[in-house]
Length: 372
Image 1 (tube, rainbow, N blue to C red):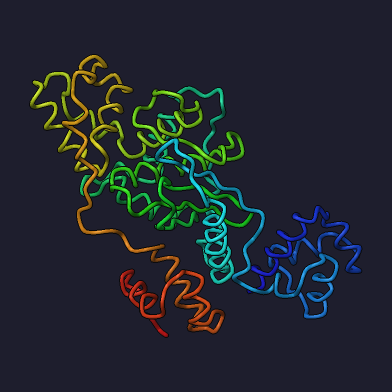
Image 2: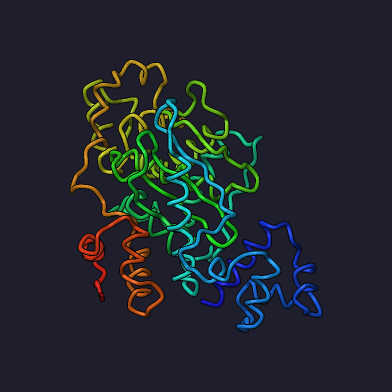
């Protein structure tokens, strides 16, 4: 709880535009290092100091100590599946803020709340699509996503993001027309994925939003972005095309694709191989087709001659039903927080928008014991 309160003080201080030096002076500390130590959790804050901090920040004590109070300093980049206006996004964004803030509070001592390796991509707006693709190949290699033929990069990506990078991944039911989002705040990175979209699109959105997390400082994304089907298509921005190139390389590494002599296949064989390879990699066959074109493995004119309708069904059907809401990491933290008295059952049910019975079912769906 100490590091959560420190993170909350830091967020509120920055929102008010107060420096560490100024807050230290107001609270009677000799230097800003004391405030820094409190904010990072390396120094315990006393009850008296906590009351003084609330007064100097002009907030109630609950705004600092309530684990469900959203952290204000969060930035979102939403991936839209259509160009139509999405209403009520602000309301849903507030929900997402509460989920992420609650996780940060109840799992503040967990390795999942911070990037373990500080992994970032050395890319900027001037980087080429080939640069982004190469970065995706390196990422797959760095984390062993392309090494085990019995597993796909898509099936291992969530675990890599959570366990190696400390990125919280949440499966959610967002508003219609939203595929997912990347979120940055000082204490945690998060990715939200629309669990109701087809598996291939979910996986691509996950890798695409990972790009934004890993390049946020050098290539800040827009609040809204428009998803597409071709890496070089249409009105989409260059940044989104770079993200697509990275995502394609992560999910479809060259080592896997070059095993097939694509240009030597007859038309029927080509279509069949596109389907079977896409199914194996858990991506859409359309994304695979354009990945092969970008690698010069498949001629563009031949790719264009393949009707999209003949490939569209692959990667679009759910194999075993929808993935459960949120994630196992998230629900483990929730269950533990309830057991330890950090959260009440009713608080948690309200936070997640579930009945108590559905909350217990969700724990079981993730293989988490519902201790309550």
